[in-house]
Every structure is written in C-alpha cells, then in structure tokens.
Length: 450
Ligand SMILES: Cc1cc2nc3c(=O)[nH]c(=O)nc-3n(C[C@H](O)[C@H](O)[C@H](O)COP(=O)(O)OP(=O)(O)OC[C@H]3O[C@@H](n4cnc5c(N)ncnc54)[C@H](O)[C@@H]3O)c2cc1C
Image (cartoon, rainbow, N blue to C red):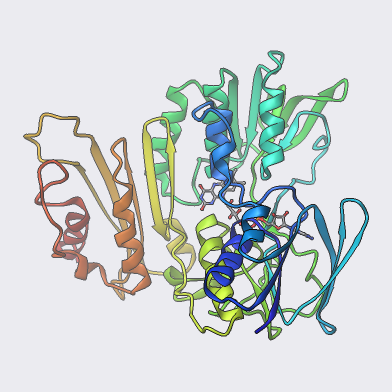
C-alpha cells in the first residue's frame, strides 16, 4: 500500500484520485490544489456567458467533501511551492500561510496548463480577460452586467475563441474575432470546413478579422479601449485572450525530467515520467498521437486529462494498465453548425510528411423520402496515399452527426486502411441514415479513385 500525493485536482487529478479511491482501498491519498474549487468544466464557460445555461452550478462534478467521504485528505487553496523529488516530499503553503509538507511513495502531477499571454503592450489593462478558471468566467459574467461594455474583441479563433465570440454575441455585444491565421478553427479543420464556420459566424453579425496580427492593446483611463493589429484598429471595451495554453511546468522545470519541447512532462504508456514513481497526467503531460505513428504529442483536452488520470491512478497502485494513445478527437457547436474532427487535417498530415490524400462526400443525413428535417452532412476522410492508413476525418452539419466521428477515431487508433471502411457493415433505417452511408461512401470513393 502506498501514500499517494496528487498535485492538482481538476479533471486529470480528479480522475486519478477517483480511480484510486474507488478501486484500490488501503492506499493513502492526499490531494492538494491551489484553487478553491475542483473539477470545473471550462467547456461550459461559453454557455454560461452566452446565457444558454442559467448558471454555473452544474459545471462541477466533484467536491472536497466528496473526496473526503471516500477517504482522501484534501488541501484546497494550498499552493505547492516546491517538490523535493529525492527526499519524496511535497512542500506547500495554505492560504492562511500554514506550511503543508507531505511525504509520498508515489506522486501524481496534475498541474494542468496556463493560458498563453502574448508578450505585447497592454495585456495588463483592465478588462483584458484570460479564460481558464471558474473565477475567469465569473469575472466575465460580472463585467457583462455593465452596459458600457458594448464591444468585445476576442483574440484567437481556435475552439475557445470561436465559442466565446458566439457567447458574447448571444449576450448582446458587438463582437470582433481576430486571428493572425487566415481562418478560424484551422488547427482542427481544413479550409473548406473553416470557411463554413466563418460564414456561420459572419451571418450572426460577428466581425471577422483573420490574417491580422495583434501588435498591442491600447487603453483609456487604465481600461482597454482598442486592439491594434498590423492591418487596423478594433475598438474594444473588453478583450478576451484565447491564443492557447502551455503546460504549467513550474514545479518540474529544471528538475531533470524528460520533457517535450514545450515543457510538458514526457510520460510512458503508464503515465509514468522519467522518474520512477512520479506520474504526470492531463495538460501538464505528453500523450501519444496514433495519427502520427504513436509519436509523443501535446494535446490539451479534458478527455485526454480524464483518460490519463485513470491510467496513472491504477498504475500508481500497482495495477498495470496501458493508455492506447489518442487521436485528438474534438467537436464544436456554434449556433446550429456542428463540426467534429479526429486525427490529422490534410494540411497537418502534409506538414507531418505523409502522402496526404482526401476523400470528400456530402449527403443528406436520412433517406430522401422522409418528411422530417433532413440536413446535409459534409465529410472528409484524410488518408495516406502510400499506406492507405486513415489519418483523420472531419464532419460538418446542422444535424447532430457527432457520434460518427468516434468510428474514425477507432480506425486511426487501430491503424485501419481506408479500404477496410468502404464496405463496413453500417445499419440503415430511414429515420436515421441512408443505405449508401456517407461514412462508407467517402471510403468507397477513395477506393475507386485509387
Ligand atoms: C474555456 C475552455 C473550454 C474548454 N472546452 C473543452 C472541451 O469542450 N472539451 C475538452 O476536451 N477540453 C476542453 N477544454 C480543455 C480542458 O479544460 C483542459 O484540457 C483540462 O482542464 C485539463 O485538465 P487538467 O486537470 O490536466 O488541468 P487544469 O484544468 O489546468 O487543472 C490543473 C489544476 O492544478 C492546480 N494547480 C496547478 N499548480 C498548482 C500548484 N503549484 N499547487 C497546487 N495546485 C496547483 C490548479 O489549481 C488546477 O486545479 C477547455 C478549456 C477551457 C479553458
């Protein structure tokens, strides 16, 4: 039996703690987090800001008391300041200044990620908002009570920036979405799909300023007033910085661990770091990308955090289970438009050196004779022209076709060729789909085009 200390209790730390407490009685579990809350679902932030949910209460699924009821010792609002990895002791300080020193047999690092703040003038002005914590969302909701905040500029048009642009527009604000890339969500989708999302945003009155590099933020009376880019100026009463996340590495930087180039802890398939008995999970750790032949990667997602937490929790207790790697599967729903993706885009596959080929297909979801709403679904499958292996897939529709992406995720995980999908046994019922299904039709087109 071990004394296991977990540093960080958001999704990854919570998953690890649950795996241990629910399945391996007898181990002593100590959980330490600097925040006052556990398990905040950041994915609900935009829904709250956009008033699509009535409040934040449902955005948590674990509490200090919940962990204590399962036998853990929990220190909240307690910041780990350093870790002596040789002596195996975690040194922390509670909000009231009390020192908390916790020895461990096994350590699980779940310190997550931090928002990237660009090194430009003006980021410290009032009403320049980062979006990560529950407290950040609370601050935004509070600021939006002020009618003087009329114009909001969101910097960064990845998933979170696009979701927040929608949220501010739904909240009645004039919204500008800026990105230096020529498109939105271009990390997850190819151009044709990005264009659909851009048109969706534009049609709801959101001003798009793509291909613009933010140079500085300017203020008046200490408050942000303008976003200055290399192409122009956007008036703004509130600016949200959504340009990405980096691993929160302060506790392990320079401590001799193997890391990725961005500082994330490199882990094996048991989530163990290069130091025996020290595990890393979630946004502070690496994962293995099956789309890129199992190469270590950094993909900061709650889904990866939860899975890696489960793996580390069991392994820390001596039950050897292996992670299976990830495809970076993700989705976004903006107004009525749903887009889902897994693996590599064509552009990413090309950059990674694959012989990237695509098969595109569009079709209405259900049999054409049905008299209910029957939207079109657009699908792209990315595959390697040489090995024929599926590398990625993207789908877009106003219909909720999202579950279909899981099949492509599995195909990538298992290294299937696109040819194996062409005649896959997919059921047909007119209420749901078509006998010539778009999943298989995209693959079949690739076979014919071979
Ligand atoms: C707005 C937003 C929307 C998102 N939407 C989605 C989505 O729809 N789907 C999805 O899969 N992912 C989404 N994500 C990403 C997801 O939230 C993260 O991948 C996930 O939170 C990572 O979990 P984690 O536990 O590894 O790290 P974090 O959530 O970063 O948690 C780290 C924890 O460690 C604690 N900590 C750090 N340092 C210390 C220290 N020194 N001492 C004590 N405690 C410490 C922190 O207080 C925190 O509780 C979203 C993120 C944001 C911000």
